[in-house]
Image (cartoon, rainbow, N blue to C red; front, top):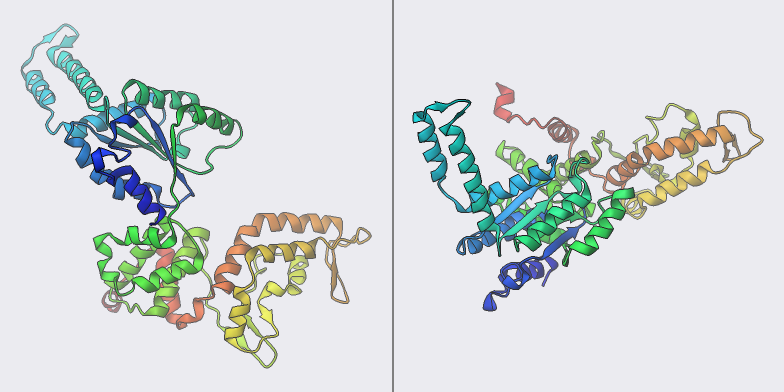
Amino acid sequence: MTNTEKLKQYLLEDNKDNNAFLLNSNNNGKTIMLSGAWGAGKTHFWQNEIEPKLKDKLRKDDKACVYVSLYGKESISEIKFEIFKEAYNAIVNEDIISKGASLMSSLAPSFGEKSLSDIFDKLNKKAKENRSKEILDSGSVICLDDFERKSKSIDLNDLFGLISHLALSLKCKVIIILNSDVFEAEEAEIFKRVKEKTVNKFFYFEPTIDELFESIFKDRKYDKLKDCKSKILDTIKETEELNARLYIQVLDNCLEWADNGKALDDNIIRVLVLTTINFVLNHMILDYQKIICSDHDCKIAYNMMEFYPNTMLVRSMAGCHFLGRYQIKDKDSYLKHCASRKDTELISEIMNNINRTDTTTHSSELEISSKTFTYSEASQKEALKWLKENEPKLKALWKYGYRLYYVGDVDKETYEDIAEFVKTGILLSKLTNEL
């Protein structure tokens, strides 16, 4: 049984004597933390696998399953208001008090600065608050998401104070969804301290790529892609990325491509998926490049250093084996060799080249002697600064341009059509273009 299946069963589906964790009254008053890697699909799991069924089960007992994102909330009172509002709306179908207040306010005369409508409005708010407390008391479930995206104006101590009040005073089960590592510096210490005092149960969400993809592909709108499903999944696996939002963007792009009457064979799927992922993660669209094979070697024509104006590092990189040129004469062996070299090795090799420093060299340019490159201290400092600033871009270019080389899987016109669609988000049908 997978991690996701075990977690779902434990939280919701162990119905023997109503023993599932979120349905067991013995767990009222507990605060639960659901953590995992960023993008692993924790919110998707809660909203699609847990929340719908949990709402139905709790509603039978006049209890609510409340979901509140902390993103955009600026105060504790705002969070509390949102929780009470969602609890009320989850159970009360018709706001009879509001309707009565609206009718009376249209008929009521004014009494000085106040009117009956003001009085009814206050009564309505008080009635709603009391009803919300009744709903939340002893058994409702409150899920607080986007914990790490809370406003800086909200103090962590105050936030955990609210959570403790909801759990202990109202006997709710409070679920906190957050990434594994969320806070830094002073907030990290506060979080560690109050977490230990407040949280009663920890769950770690750790789906595989297959699990996460399958959970998203359940959406009926992707039924049109069922014949492409395996190829899309296999291509995602090449990237080793575990990210729910990324999978959704990939599937949406594939769906839009198909809906516009475009061909969607295996090669096009691979290019479309990898172009989408590379652009979303790195905001990078690769130029169309074919692999060139000669009698001596193979290479891809990307110039990794073309965006660096100083020839010093460019010349140094010319001696780096990661430039994509090897004494390999056939394309398949060349790509296999590229795939074996990790981006971390690329950075290490560049670093080694830069660290060859000759303190007696005063030129700002690279000194070349017998293919040995030496830097002055000043030029070394400049190169290391450049490397630190551009490391993510270099890694992305190596991974998607070389290791996962895909641009040549289709002809240039098709690739540029895909790249333009991914970059701009605009895809016009063939018929529209002809018109």
